[in-house]
Length: 229
Image 1 (spheres, rainbow, N blue to C red):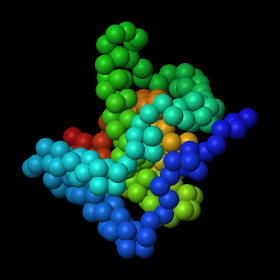
Image 2: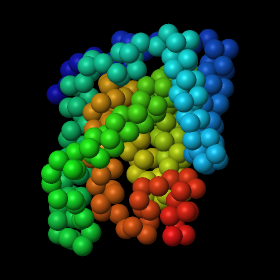
Image 3: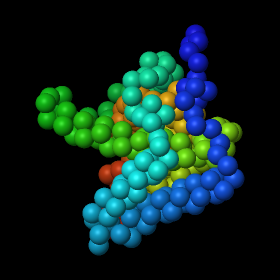
Image 4: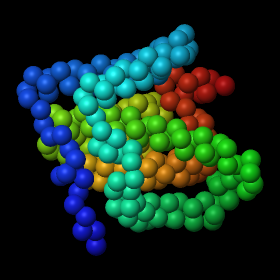
């Protein structure tokens, strides 16, 4: 049994004044809309626009005086978060692996070796970055607006899923997974177990999903371009 005090009780800044809440809500909407615009419109013409978007997020951390511990970027609550994430991950991933093993035509795993490690590590870093954006930034900001963490977790999950449209498998998986991750983060502020679970889960989704639906894990316009090939 986990008896540690939830990090949200000890390190959360709490809900701010109404006018600050309004400004924070506008900030969230602006940054999220900019990310969607980058995915759907800006990326082909302005591939480095993500630098400006990241600068906006970093500037927000400075303005809001965020701490690494509240952002889940330290070792604080790592064990507690892992103790929650691990059983859930095993419950979901083990049946998926067993299903893939019994349906060898579905489970297409590259042969083990050093060549597999760099792509897996790169994807893992990408998952860390996604959890940083969704939890360390968006969820933290939402928790400055509302003390209802079930509500903020639901909003984060919908945002995470919507960012993966129109890929049907990824949209469903990231919405459901995003809700689970956000609920855990609201209680135990650490993104690393979440990112690890996302990395393994994303790998399994990639190798088990029908190619005609997963489209090489593409989202946004790239999903349709893959469809036309």
